[in-house]
Length: 218
Image 1 (tube, rainbow, N blue to C red):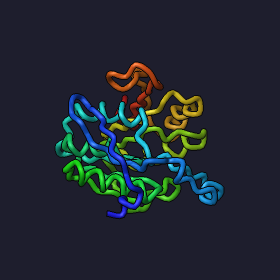
Image 2 (image 1 turned 90 degrees about the vertical axis):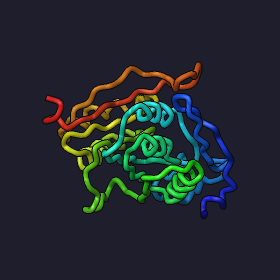
Image 3 (image 1 turned 45 degrees about the vertical axis):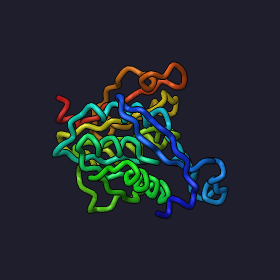
Image 4 (image 1 turned 45 degrees about the horizontal axis):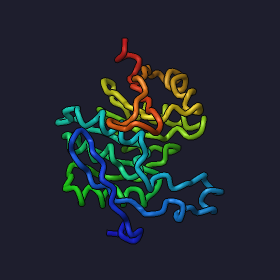
């Protein structure tokens, strides 16, 4: 597979007693392209698994996803997508970076995970053929204040009427505008108490925003 050009290294991640092998590039900083950053603020955050993705994966691991569809936005290496597929969801993992999707496919194959497809997705131009999903999830994607507006709009567009979205974030100050951005586009938001990944004693605490259409929440 093309992902092998990164000489990926293995990281073992435990989710509710089950070990998942995640292969990632060994040096994220070596992937930084200054021209890509100047043109479109691209930084290869996709090349590692962050605490937000682990907490989100833990939430999804205990859900019976059989018969349901799930969309991950800004998936990076796709730990939540992989766990969701293992939980029975039919998963579409999306990212702006094609190498990230190569990593998702590589890791799905390595872990024997099916019912998962990948797709390049630019939040600024959602194709007309993108359907509504029972679940929409995202981890650690609210880096800048304008990301709140973009993410809220995408969730409003891709979340089924009776669906629920989970957005995991490490309590960033710049994520504070996300709740208001959601309400502006007809979504209701509540937050789960911030916590670290199970068993972790240091590192950031992760909030999960639970998002629904307002008509559903009333």
